[in-house]
Amino acid sequence: MDKKNKTKQLPLYIQISELLNREIAAGHWLPGDRLPIEAELAAKLGVAIGTLRKALKKLEEDGFLERRQGSGNYVKRAPSGRAIYQFFHLETLEGGGVPTADILSVTMDDDEFVKRQLNIEADGKLWCIKRARYLNRELVAMEQIWFKHAHAPSLKPKDLHESLYLHYRDNFSFWISRVEDEVDCAPAPKWVTDNLELAPETTMPKVHRRSWSNEGNIEEFSFTWYDPAKCRYVARWH
Image 1 (cartoon, rainbow, N blue to C red):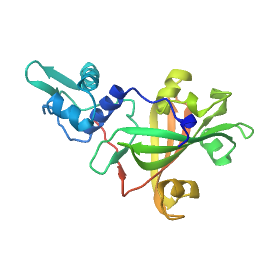
Image 2: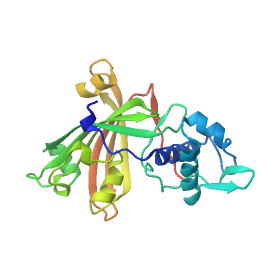
Image 3: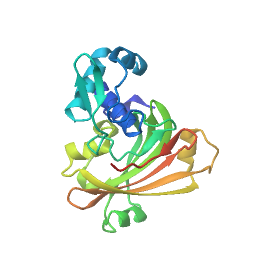
């Protein structure tokens, strides 16, 4: 991965809070359970105590944890859609896992099928992003994402945040409030199998996603091919 294509990474304490958020959502800890002591949890996650405490403080502020003086940190309630990755449904086979991504390319596109999904005129243009997706630093999936060119007249990999939904919220005039996923299996394109080091035309699970903004407009369409030997697709409702 060329360093010039690196996306803007989330701060480490945010990554840890997202990881713990997803672990709680996966049922590793239930409401009322006490988390491991901070020194043990920090060692397990490979982070400094100070970083872990910032992550725990954020989860406490979000209402997911309760800190009891002299006793520890307890799960107050399961996450309910406020996390950065609330619509991210890939998890490790054991459950949870912190997502990260690297951009492979950002190009202009005029795919007619995608234009129809996004309700774009025939002469409209699209941005197309190809990404490698990781869970706990292990490569598990490849993504191809499209959105309207009109949102950004120019775009480079270094401009983008690894959470595109966060990027939309901070840089465009909308945020994603609803998604619709369809999952099937199909032979993956060569760029996908090459990056995942799989045999050409391997049949893989493929997620088709349409994402709507807070204004009710469909703003993003994507494909995600994921390796079922390394991760699974999970959807939960609370």
